[in-house]
Structure formats: C-alpha cells, structure tokens
Image (cartoon, rainbow, N blue to C red; front, side):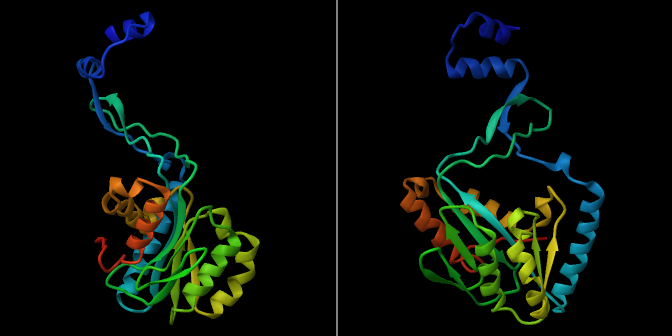
Length: 246
C-alpha cells in the first residue's frame, strides 16, 4: 500500500497529496464522535428513558416542574472534531478528555414553553437571567457550590419539582446528602440518570447549541472575550437563544 510505504520510508508529501492518497485508499474526512455508550447499562437506560417520558407528560399537564442541570466546560483549546476514517464505517469514538484553561458553567434549564424567574450569578458578582439560572467559574464546581446553587434556584420554584442530573461525584457528596431532606420538604425530587446516558439529560442539547451554534470563532480570541460572550449568551437563553425539543 502506498500509504504504508510512505510511512516506512519517511517520505513527506503535501497535505493535498496526502488527502488524495487517503481518498484513493477508501478514507473520508468526517466528524469524530466522542461516545461512552458502549459502557452504559442498557436495561437501566431504557427504564430511565420510559420514566422520563412519563415525567415529561406530567410536566406538560402542569402537575410537576421538570428541570435539567449539568456543568459545561468552555475552553479556548479547540477539540479534535474531524479525522480521516474508512469510508462507509461508523465514526470512531475518541476518549472524552477535558483540556486546561477556560471556564465552567453550571446551569438549570427548563424546556420551553415552561418559564421561570431566577437569579444567575458568577463566582464574583450577581447578574440576572430571566429563564436560565447559571453560574460561571474558572474551576470545576465543588459539592458545596452546587448545593448553594440548588438552594438559590429552588427558592424560585413552587410546587413539585423534578431535577434531572447525572451521577457526577459532587451530585452525591456529603453536602448533598445532608440537604436532601430539606429539599424534599420544599418539593424537590432528584432524578439521577444511569451512567453514560448524557442523551437523557436534555440540557446536553442546549450545551451543544451553545458551543456549536451560538459561539463564533471571534469569541475565542482571548480569555476575556470568551468569558464575556458565554455570560452574554447564557443571560438570553430561552429568550434570544432557544432550541426546540421533540
């Protein structure tokens, strides 16, 4: 094979020539998927899927408030999104790793048309977000900060409320366990998802649009522009920035 010969002999070729050789060998340049689906417990995933479908029906009927929460990392280090792969085969998954630098954002999201009024703050100062309570930080969130965020968000809720979340360690740490009884008295139920089931947490769809549709290349120019832009967008989610869920 020509490609094997090039590697063995150390001959260098231009990017366009290499691309032509790879296409001739049956490869295509396409998006790389980062996926942990093979590691999830399928039975628990299907059960959670059915439970959430029922809860969404209850939320549409106005019997409960259904919210989703998650933490997202925004970094100026661009991820590898495309690679040469064999034509006709499924995209190859790569390990999901977190780069250094950037900011973490913790958000609470309720699917439209449901709305709420809440206060969103950064680690330094308070700002206002009409329908998307959020917190930003240069570091990952701790259990103590997450409990504080839940307490402030829950103060804006009335009636039975279900919060969908993953099994991150901070979501099950001692400060959280110590708050569970008080949260239940205030009408909150935590709905933990099975491991490796991000597609069940609909805020993941919002994060996808945030990164791939609402942020522009110029927003990554400096740490300051990135910080300012992610907070500007977050403050207008469910108003200027919206997504549709089936």
